[in-house]
Length: 350
Image (cartoon, rainbow, N blue to C red):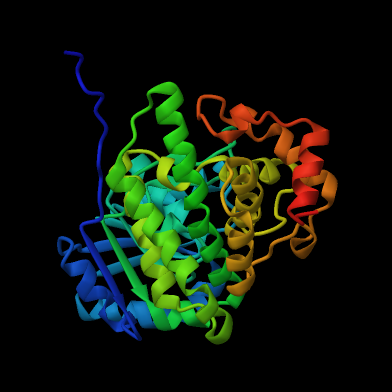
């Protein structure tokens, strides 16, 4: 008998989702090991809104805090913060904010060997609970770090974030439909490991958005439902030991756009648009995916986020080359400019 290929499952130890519960953050950290000192990483805007409340909560549990401010997510900038955080001698590194601050804290905690806690202030993608980070480096895709030891969410804070961010989170969840099908394809064609439990968990997160999208169109996306879906998707990646259940050809398309047109569009928005096109290549109901994205207020065309048609076509032709070892539908449906243009036009993306 050949031995089974092993992979590591690193899961969050504690997750708390509440409403107006920011005052409980110190107590939450106490349950993770009674830290005496923590390093907090966030952007300027988040500090203006939340710093006083978080400081009060930490002082009530006699936890000392050192704040660090993020700029961009360039590796060089992260390295400077990392040197400062390492000098803190803290017990836990906390990422507070959107994707940039959470990813920065996640990578730094991994590099210096400290536990990581995620405190997201927006539900724009599943990075709040996953072991993966997206930073600007020589790698054109997300890289592996550590899963958070804890995830703390105040839904009241999430609701006050711009509606576009919550819609982006829906796009990242819908993308799981494409990712799981690509994972199944990789299992079939390359005998790649496929974990049904992780795949089903990721699919459930996507289906909840799909099934509730008509209600979301009337009432707006439910922040708690989206947050729970994003956390579940992050946990699915933890269980799989890779990003496979949540990242397929649609994510490669998004990463290609990151290279072609950096700073245009949110991650979940680009993954959602990519999902429409990849669903058609896979033979799935791309019109239903498009309708779901419209219902939640997410973009379904390049123009809506400021992308030119040529950018979409170029991204489709280069996407698979960014990660040739990952088998997706783009391996079988090789894109040239003509095919890419026809695909994007026929789905209304351009």
